Image (cartoon, rainbow, N blue to C red; front, side, top):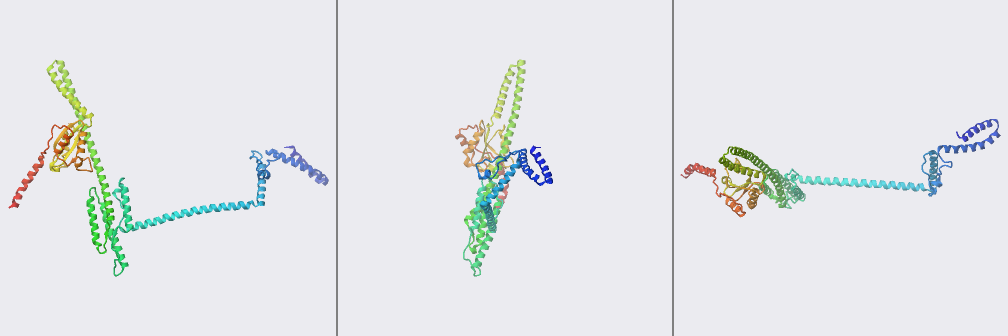
Length: 490
C-alpha cells in the first residue's frame, strides 16, 4: 500500500481521537489530512495507469483549440480517461445551449428527416402510379380481348406456332386480324339503316347481325385452320370463300360483307398452317428416305463384304490347286489354274475397289408405263452387286406393275453421273418438295440425249418400254369388255 494511503489512514484515526479529546487539536490535523488526501488521489491515478496531471482532455483541448492534439484511447487508466471525456462532453453541450447551436442542429435534423420522408413518399407515389398504369393496361387488354372474343376470334392453337420460320409471320397476321376487329374494318355494312322507323334500333340491329355473322365467318376460318393438311390449302381456301359468300347473302339486307383485307388475312392464316404442315411432312419424308438410303448402303456393304469373302476363298482354292499341280509337275493343268487364278484375283480386286470407293456403283434409268404413263422416268443409282435387285425392290406392292429398265451401267463415279442428270432435268422434276423422289417428266430418249451431251458412255440403252404386264392387262380388259360392248351395240 502506498505511504500516502497509510498517512491518510493514521491521520484519520488521529483526527477522530483529537476530535473526541479537544476541538483545537482537530483543527491542526485537518490541513494535513487534506494534503495527504490529495497525495493519495495522485497515487491512485498512478496505480490506474493515468498520468499525474491526467490526460489533458478538457474543453480547451477538445474543441475550443482545434490545433491541440487529443490523446488516443489508452490501454490503462480508462476510468480517468472516461471521466475527462464525460466532463468535456457536458461542457460542450452547455456551450452549445448557451450560444443556441442546439436549435440549429435540431432544425437541420428535422429538415433532413423531412427530406427523407419526402423522398420516401415520392418513391411510394411513383410505385403506386406504375401499379395503376399496369392495372389500367390490364383493364384495356381485357376489354380488347373481350371485344375480339365477342366476334368469335380466339387465340387457338395454330400449327405454325411451332415453326421457327413462320411463327413471327403468324404473330404479325394475328395482330393485324385483332386490330381490324377493334377498328371495325373486318366487315362493312350500310349506314342510316332504320328499324321500326328508328335509326337507333336500326343501328342496334345492324350491330347485332354484324357480330353474329362475323362470328360464323371466324368460326369457319378457325375450322379451316384446324382441319388443314399438307397440300390442301386450295380446299380450305374454297371452303372459306363459300363461307364469305354465304355471309354476303345472309346480310344482303344491310349490305353486310367481309372486307377483302380481312379475308386475305384469314386466308394467310390458313396458308401458314398448310406451309408448316408441308414442311413437317417433307422433313418426315426426307428422314424416311435417308433411313432407306442407309439401309440400302448397309445392304450393299454386306453384299460386297460377302462377295469379297467368297472371292478370297476362290483365290485361296486356286492357289492351293496350283501348288499341288506344280508339285506333281502338271504344267498344262497349272497353266489353266493360273488363268483361273488371275480371273479370281481380278474379281477380288474389283470388289476391294468397290468397297474402298463409295461413289462407285450402277446408274439406272427405269420407267413404269402402266403406273405413271409414257412421259415419266426414274433416275437413280445403287451400289448393290446385282443392281437388278434394287430395281425389283422398287417394283414391289407400292406400284401395280414392274419397272422397265432402259439403261443400267456401271460408273466409278455413279454419284456424280446421277447428280448431273438430276440437275439437267431439274425443271421436269415431279416432286418439287421432296427432292429425294427421283421421278422426272421426261422420256427415255430425253435421258439418252442428256447422257450424250455430257459425254457419258453407255453400252446399251433401250428407248422403248416392254411393259408386258400392262399390255397383257389391257388385252384381258378389252377381251372381257367385248361381249358387253356387242350386246350394248345390238
